[in-house]
Image (cartoon, rainbow, N blue to C red):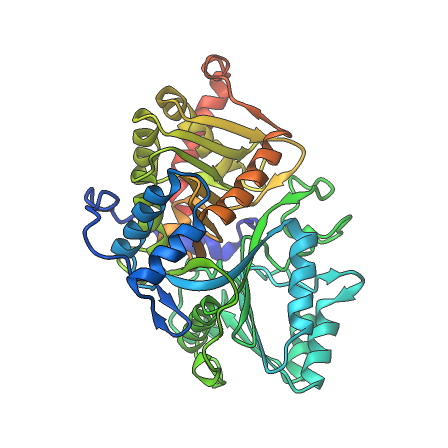
Length: 460
């Protein structure tokens, strides 16, 4: 979700001139599977026998075992965060399901609620407003900590935040647009694009859904509306996680909180280790431009490079880097069934045009492109080989790599992949496939617009 460019963004454009996308080593994504796979459970590392039993349980088809082992090995090779077993996961479709799950989780809180959102507004679910629910939980003695992005939440009425603060809810404004309020150095172009809810250190929700009124039926909220028209349906996906990985999400939240000099509060060390709640294997990836190679970016490219059968991805904003383009094209050329679900309209016209500028090369390589209709696609999801899935906040664009702090959950196993693939199959029903011959005949004016948009792709 991209808000209109403000005056502060013009300054950010000038400050971003030297930002570059890191190159991912060609060796990444093609590892020899030699090292034993390491997976952590609620009580520590799993034994080889336990890992074998887990893999047998996670696979669906007869060929999935080898594919899953390959992706497990690649995950282990490219990321410093552990693979965690014992997770219960549930996919959440669009705002209605996600808000219902969020509000239910908040209602269940006994000790602590942590919220971190790019856009934070006073949303409602089933007639209950977020502010009323949070105030009620605070009266019960539950600690509540909130990080909201200064730019993303710039349209939220100040009274909303003042009401929460007056009730004893701790608030941190991430990288204030106003330089006089900055506590960590002025960084107007580095935004907190994460969407995280953690309750009691054991239940978490992560994905692409902002706490924005845009997701509400018949919403009158203004953030994210397209071209000044009445709000449309926003198609998005979140993931609810119960189990040890929730503590990883809370650790990311605490890390941001401390970086932004928020007041002290109890972090994940104050909670006992979350018990196993299910059979999924999850890796939480918190990416930041402050690291040389953003974890999710490297992980995604390595997974695409290693794909054997299929790649299906939905992208709200498709302005791919050269490494992402090369990985997708090479996958299609070696016979992988590569499918992209992209929007036919967007709240970022420039991002849409940049995506269009890449269609010809992708189509020529054999990539299948589908465009949605009558909705705003905001989902950021990928399924590879029917065993590797990701739901998160990262877009297929430059900004998610070089400017934004993002969070993504990689889930390994056939069950979640099958559920996510079923969502894709349902989305295809309201989408149309781009025909290469027809696309080649698009107007010259459209091509010129694509060339112009490429100038700005670093910021999209």
